[in-house]
Length: 166
Image 1 (cartoon, one colour):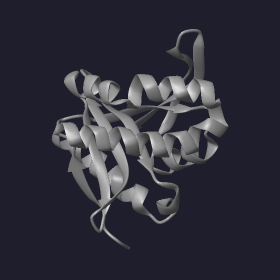
Image 2 (cartoon, helix red, strand yellow):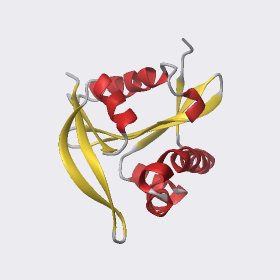
Image 3 (cartoon, helix red, strand yellow):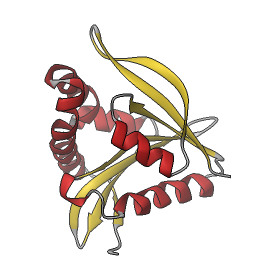
Image 4 (tube, helix red, strand yellow):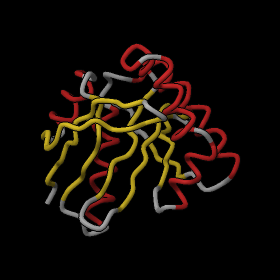
């Protein structure tokens, strides 16, 4: 299996590149699940250069997932008081199903453990069955069923999932 590497986003150019990659992946992936209007609002709020920069300023970290020098996906994490939050976890479609997500999760889990955390929490769209199954494979369990606001009068149905890693 090929080994992925992780490139931390620290520059304005990387922020712009991240926004472009995130928009490409998430538009293709989420338009069919939540619709173009809701996905567009989420992309504008969370994956624009401004949205990513705001998350970083609030303590989040973004990483490109690279394979042989090519940026093929990304992860974002944010240490919280009680848990390590997995904010983003995405691959371009052509790289899914090749075992690369396992390497990505190992990276996140190692960062969480090194930072002293014993659990990782994430939100996932309740209609995203394939991703929910993948997270369960990694040891996550559904803890809550929520409606999350993503824009003015726009909500998505999410599950809050948790993995007790320690």
